[in-house]
Amino acid sequence: MTNIIIALPKLEDAKGLKNVLVRNGFPVAGICTSGAQAVSHADGLNDGILICSYKLTDMVYAQLREYIPPGFEMLLIASDHLLSQCQGEDIVSLSMPLKVHDLVNTVEMLSEGILRRRRKAKAVPKVRDPQEEALIREAKEVLMGRNHMGEEEAHRYLQKCSMDSGTNLVETAQMVLSMMKV
Image 1 (cartoon, rainbow, N blue to C red):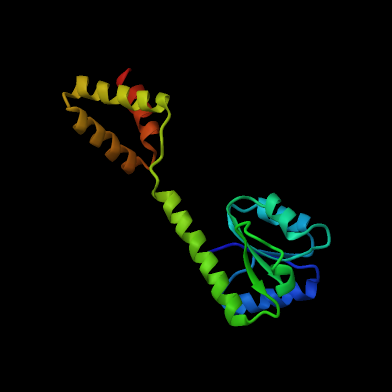
Image 2: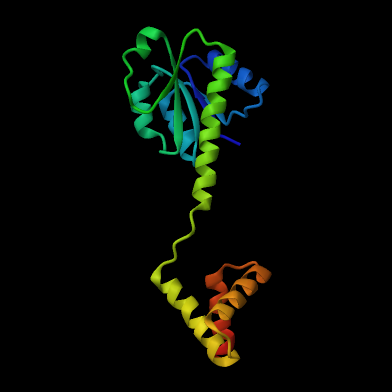
């Protein structure tokens, strides 16, 4: 599920846009009329889509882009005249008047990109700090010395105990060390 925040100067317009998105299967996390409200909503979330107009009650889109967390995509909705002034900046835009089909397809595309980034971030293996590596290595050495295991066998034993107990490998290594040093 992708977090969607709508920031438009007129609350009625924001509610109308929310209704369109909800009818098309997109949950909306919040609607607001100012940039400060949008930033406040976004700060509580890791990532998502911020749909906004060129100008809000307290700031323009470029300022808002600077303040929202980096995991957010911005979908700028404005007239062709205003969009021609917006260059680069890694912002997706749609021109007014909006076509429901274009809006839904664009939000779907942005949502899929965010989900792809989430999956990619999960696939990156966790890097342990040297202290954690030393703790795991020490637990393996204790297992190898006391139980006559090879290094690979000791590592597999730690992994299995970790999975069986529902703890991470470092916590399991700590438990093994505390039990074996008694």
